[in-house]
Each structure stands twice: as structure tokens, then as C-alpha cells.
Length: 240
Image (cartoon, rainbow, N blue to C red; front, side, top):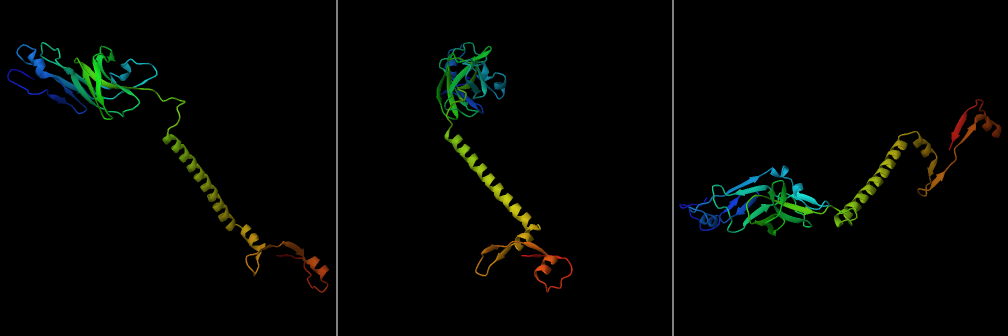
């Protein structure tokens, strides 16, 4: 507040957590009888859920995002509320900034957001400074294009796709070797192992594999081929 008994040498800055305002309160006080003026600066943390960015009229194929908290600035108990200089607002971005989008400083007019009398002075990835020639309820809206279906993939998307393919190949190869290991273990523990070991002979010169044919010969055949044999019982013998 500025009055006859309160003097200021520079324009005061009013701050909240996510925004600030610079207003020429000294010039406003000089234009009022008695030389006094007061300013009220309010910030609403959840007001964007009610005053949604969808109330900002743009083309239908755009995405609108509220980039700041909603603020209000008024001049209570001030007869002449005409501004001597534009008011500057600094908004901290509460959501991720899209470099391909555009930012608009808007104010609430009955039932919608409009930009009349407001403009963007400067911006970066974290903050935006707006300038308006009147007082009202303000916010910062980002307008961007939706992702195109035929848009070429980015480097990150291509790299991610290739990594997914490599992972799938590694998983398949791992499953194949795991299955072979299970099969080897099953054969080692089964009677098939004895049959394999019985039909494979290792020679003295090295690990030369020689496969032999297992045959069955009855005791009667042995008697026919060898008359001197005294085997009288019919038995079967496996030789390898």
C-alpha cells in the first residue's frame, strides 16, 4: 500500500511460490486523490482445474496445457484504477515446456480465456514473463500440435526399437541353451545313458568313436554253431 505517510522509491515486486508481479503502485497513487493506492495479489494453486485451458479458443487440432498457477491482481480501495504502466507477471512453469509449442498470456473474461491486452515479453524453459495493460485474473497457456501419425521416428525411438530386438534375440538364445541343458540332464539320469555308454567304445589311439551293433544270440544258436558246447538251457545273451 502507498499513502501520504508511506513513500516508495521504486516499483515493488510482489511474490508468491510460482509467480510474481511488478506494478507501478507509486504512479497509481499519484493519480488518486489523497495520493494513496493498494494492490492485492493472489495465487490459486488448484484453480486451473476449474478454469481449464480448454476454455482458451484455438483450432481443434491443438493440445492446450496450463503452464502456470492462476493469479489475480486487483486495486482495492483505489478510486482511479487506471494503470500508468503495463503490469509485468513472471510465471514459473509448473509443467514441462514444449519447445515446439507456443505460449500465450491470457486473462479470464466471464467464461473463457482471451489474450487481449497481454503479450509475452520473454521466456525460457522454466519461466515466462507476461505484460498486460489491465488487471484481472491471469494464467499462462501452452498451445502445441498433437503428434502426427506419419511423423518419422526420432533417434531415441529407433534406438529403443533396436534394443528391444536385441533383448528378444538374447532371450530366445538363452531359452534354447537352457532347454538343451535340461535335455542333457534328463538323459544323464535316465536308462538311456547306459545304452549310449554300451554302444560307444573309445579306442586306445584317442577318442575315435566306433559304433557297434548290439545283437542278441540265443543259447540254441550257440549250440548249433559250436557242437562242443554243453549249454543245455535256452538263455539269451547280449554282447556288444
